[in-house]
Amino acid sequence: MHDSLLMTIRHFISVTPAEEDLIRQLFVPEALPKGGFFLRPGEVSRKVAFILQGVFHNFQNRDGQDLTYYFGREQEFIGDYESFLPAQPATHGIQALEEARLLTITHDHLQQFYREVGQGERFGRLMAEALFVDVLRQLTSFYEESPEQRYARFVRTYPDLQQRTPQYYIASYVGVKPQSLSRIRGRAVS
Image (tube, rainbow, N blue to C red):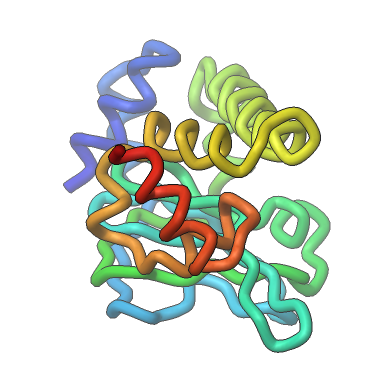
């Protein structure tokens, strides 16, 4: 169960067998049903997770409508660091779009990971840098790209999600209404 997590960590840092054992202890298996919440808006985020199976969307609810700004899928980490790090109520939510299996780690255990895994802090920094680049790329795309270009980037970045994710979440991520996404997709196929 922890093998894919360890493989991901080893892609960035080296770990000893003793550190691997510690990682197995710190990351706890958890399951969520389709539609289940990893984090609800207003709750304080107590953990982050590595996705073993499933797709998630990070969203903000504005005027009763969920606005998707990030997708997480297998072999990726999810969390709301804006809530997790300062232990403040979340303004965003994270919801499973499919039945999901995760390995979760609490804030205290993450701090232990940073202290006791030789290159743990380096791993944390590299993950934060990757997340920063992803978020910045998504943000700047709304200023620099047309909806068609944003959709094409979505398809390149998440080629498997078109079949696994409701179209209205993809439309929200791209920044258009579902009807507009249908037109964009139709033109892309032509």
